[in-house]
Length: 268
Image 1 (cartoon, rainbow, N blue to C red):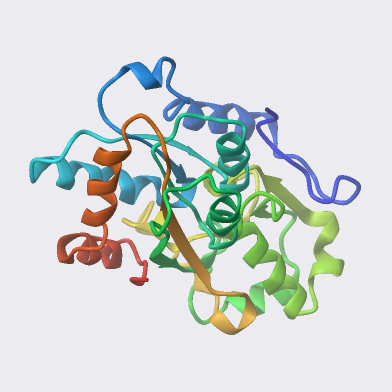
Image 2 (cartoon, rainbow, N blue to C red):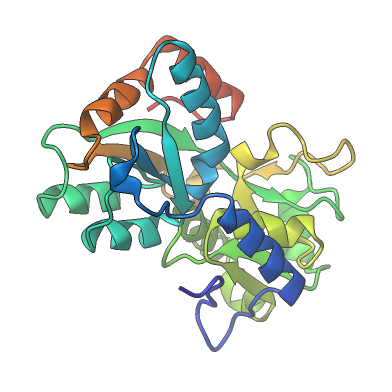
């Protein structure tokens, strides 16, 4: 699997090598576990944007007597493909509604288990250009940057939202030569954080807590510029689906909802 994708191939740019190395390290922290079916505890496929929140939720879940939960993170599109190919996941926390719905139509989920667990927020972030809530549009229109990072729209929901935003602003074509694409939102964040792109589109949850005091708060992209980022969960017929079912129910409760707001998600 290629660590980075360029979309479209003839117009975008791959990230710099050091970003690729950092991204691979990030991916190595959440590998697809070997022998997953033989170990206790549910294995949950989770969209990269939600991984930090998911880890904390799993910790809280375990504190209440729940089973330890393991995660395999990546772009929603890649995780979807793995599930279709038979990966032994017990649940799927996607970054969109479309792919869980497709799995439902394919008969790959436990019937009646799909629900929206969070609504995400797209943010334009640039720590070296101090993007904030007041100057985001101005910076985009000014073009005073060399590279603008976003996740691959074909694989990642936040990338699709970023493309919709730029298209709606009439900037996608004019900025096409400056765009660089990550295979998921974690790689996109890494490119911006390391300076391989001056700014880019990330998930608001990735800025909690702020990376640095002087890194800028980012520009929360108004909802009118893209489709709502409604993130659905489904229970899969994996080897630990009953434990996964309990974890998904935990995500609907008050303590989980409070934590979601802390990570700048809205409840479903």
